[in-house]
Image 1: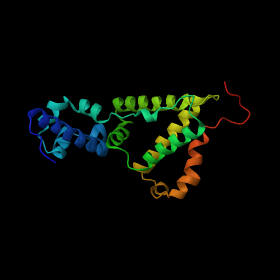
Image 2: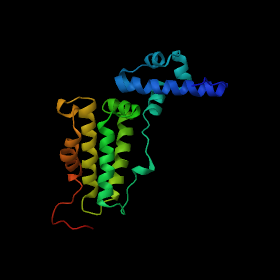
Image 3: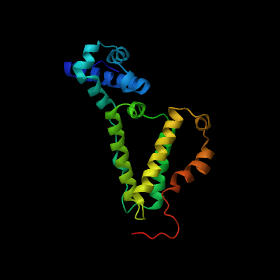
Image 4: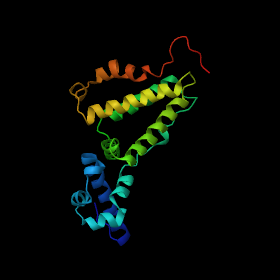
Length: 195
């Protein structure tokens, strides 16, 4: 890849390198244990450049942990149960693989850093509302929250706690065990009426 030639392009490339290094640093150490010096070392820059580009460690963390949402993530009342299930299976597939750096950094810090807690809560609340919109049954929001929380728990158990039973999940187990488990909370209990 060619080196950037303009000053603005070099500055942007440096900022991007710092950002990627920060995601790795925060993903490994969390907000509290990560340092500006550690980010700078990973990026191959002076620590003053980190601060020049992002202002502070907290400012860098805020940018490094922005979770990206795509329009394909949106469900609505016209979504069929099959579309909802496929959406969830796609999310499950993503979560079973290595989480993106920004998600890893946020998850590592969400229980110890208030800004990470707020960012994760906002993201998950948005995911719950998205999933609940596709359900006209009773307690749709609660059932959506249970499903979203289950995916978060699976992600943490597999990638951060490295539970042995979850490290070698086969495709067959995903189809026969995880898929039914994932959609179980979304099914309204028998005998309940939709609103």
